[in-house]
Image (cartoon, rainbow, N blue to C red; front, side, top):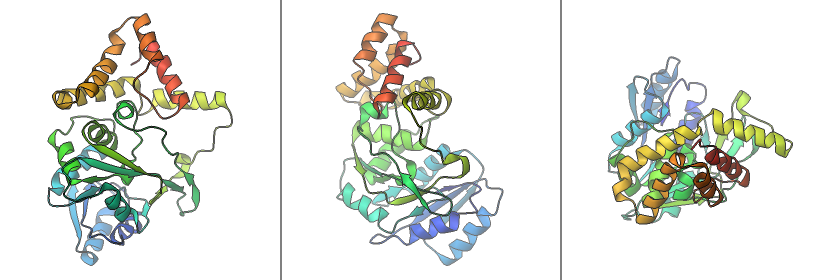
Length: 297
């Protein structure tokens, strides 16, 4: 768990993790430079729960903080899970993941992620995340759908990610999804094992019609984490670290995606019409095709 100014909900989150059924849990928490009461709360919890290990450190940002935790965790555990600081885990969250990931002796990298149950600050249900229509490396190059707080990895997957930690990435969970989908297996659970808090203006209403939905998704695509240039930069860094280990098929897929911006308008049009990378909805794929033709990727 990476914590930052999480005093309001962190106790509830930690206690839900330590109440997991059917598994033995060791909780490694890194405080990323909090200025509120988070560190005091963590210290008090550690006195009650000896299975908590604390690291108080300076602020490096969420992705770097999680990667430092993954490195520090070592190789002595069967499974590794990311946790946010303000959600609530259902008691069977981890045991379901462990069962779906299979044998603890597996040498194949495997990663689990699941659906989310959205709740407000008082844990009143708001809805559920969409069930993905596609997943795998062809999706991971251009979209993250594995929310970090649902991710559980086996030891082989953890070791694979730690072989080449990135200098920069859009998000730690996206990077794990990208790496493990390239070399291992990613499994999805339609059961939401987590109550995922949506805060304040993060609780958004449904978009009422296609035009407004198109506008909202285009703004999200261009204005936040899915900025095309950054998606391409992330794929380029991945290829520089892991390209020589990729299968021939995944190497062709990655190189084709990285080179499309250099091509002329006709070649970009052909690539867009036969797009081998895929996002999760027809609307997102339409937007991506338009951006490819426009030379944004």
